[in-house]
Amino acid sequence: MSFTSACSSALGPGDNAEPINEYAVVSYIPDQLGEFITRLRQELVPGCVAKSHVTILSPRPLSNPDGARAQLRSRVTSFEAFSIEIPNLQIFAETAVIYAEISTGKETLGRMHDDLNVDMLEHDETYIYHPHITLAQGLPADQVLERYDLAVRRWNESVPRRRTMIENLTFVQNTNANRWLDLDQFELRAALLI
Image 1 (cartoon, helix red, strand yellow):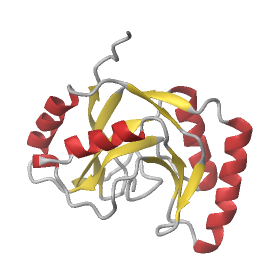
Image 2 (image 1 turned 60 degrees about the vertical axis):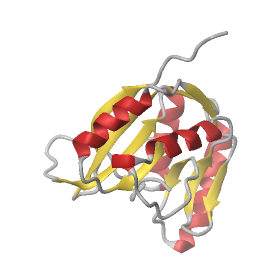
Image 3 (image 1 turned 30 degrees about the vertical axis):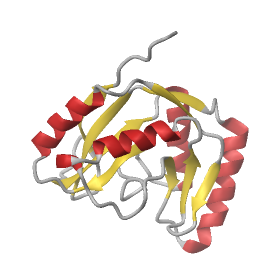
């Protein structure tokens, strides 16, 4: 799954939220595609301020956040930047989450998740890891299909492209206001061109 709330995001000026012991690793969707997905999320869930992302490690408590960050820094060096493709939109039936499916890059995201979910970052996750980009969650049951239809219509009309590069990961921490703080960003190795 993705973040606890589809509408959490980094704190802005004047926010008085306090950090809590809940961390995740994400990769923000860059450029026009990221902007399009962020606007779509806002349309599907009014008031949503979350930035579009792929979750690599779902929210989890950490006993040693500094050690986990060092471990993340060390392990990220084994991954090259890679592309993902988003062919269509779906709904997770069990949780009524509307999401963008990932095809190309899905296996790489899975390997990355498995490689990072160890030692100080390890967590027994509620759901099997399924790489995706959350568009809406926590909707009233009677609105899910209507919002899904709207999402598909907007996607088919306006998506600028369906492929983008994953070039970095961001280590984030939640707050008691369910707004996420960016703690550190890690660049993936440049892909070797042959």
